[in-house]
Image 1 (cartoon, rainbow, N blue to C red):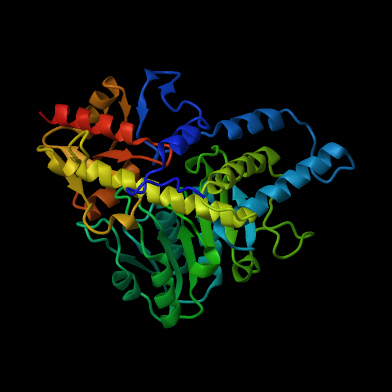
Image 2 (cartoon, rainbow, N blue to C red):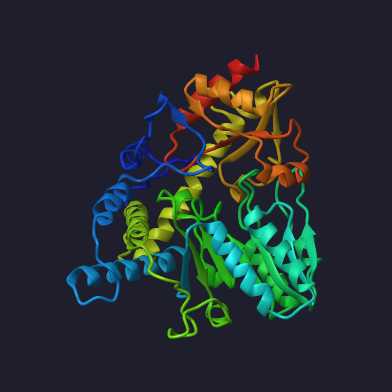
Length: 424
């Protein structure tokens, strides 16, 4: 099979064209017109296949557990969608759906802290409020000590050692982010969990994979986590759904449930089958993409091959953003641009860059990009103030540039040329 990766890790021009054809609004926005989209960390572009499925399935009136062909279709769609969560995350665990990934994290963290014995819980100051605030709330309610590991501001990540040193035999829950949506840096989840379980074999581990799962393969069984949470809208799907995948151990703990159902049933009410259909459409896309890199008939193997290729492509984009090419200078070469948390191995981060222009408000800078046809985020959200402090970020915020595997090298070059002009 001919490689779809040139030596720089980017998709071949042929595959890049095929990928971009599968996304809606890839080069234009119904509100601003032609533009280059570099705000994927806020929420990815949608797959056309997902949009088509949502339109088709939304019109169906049938409910679960009825004696009709339509009801059978709805139940089969939900079953397939759950199987595709397991396929994507590499585990045969129990699937929990929620309106958002945040609500899935709040629910599972509450049940973890109130069930697993101990006197303290551990997280990081780099974590999203979905994890940090939920863990803080339930630690306070249950009287547990709340322990927080801080990141290295130069690398934008939290080391294994700084987390492990907070864990002891009385740590009941460890909850942490797999990838940062501010610095883009990944945490070494496998080694963190290995060391945590060496210290306390019974510790409960919950991972927020929202900002990691769209960019690299996940194998929950290999990681050994109890809970892994994703947000489909950041993985080229749709809003209105979040998924948590639970280990067999976690699925059996006490939780909100309908008493007539089995003890490991986490469904509350009637799920909207449209959300599951949309997720399966996204996994269909990953299976198609992975078919360019493996001849395996296994859906899981094709999805894994796709995510390995995505990881390679976004690393290539990140390298181009930072160091440039013969088309444009990289951010590290442009005077007047300050980068945050960008030291370290580029292989261990998604294509997210936190930057500022000297003396320019981030929101103003984002507006100036938009006027030049480029969408980035001027991030000054109250959700990120703790992150800004932990990473020594000035200006009260950042210009966040974020790309995905549908982002072309030409889009990066356009951004770099515009940045060099703006910096003057």
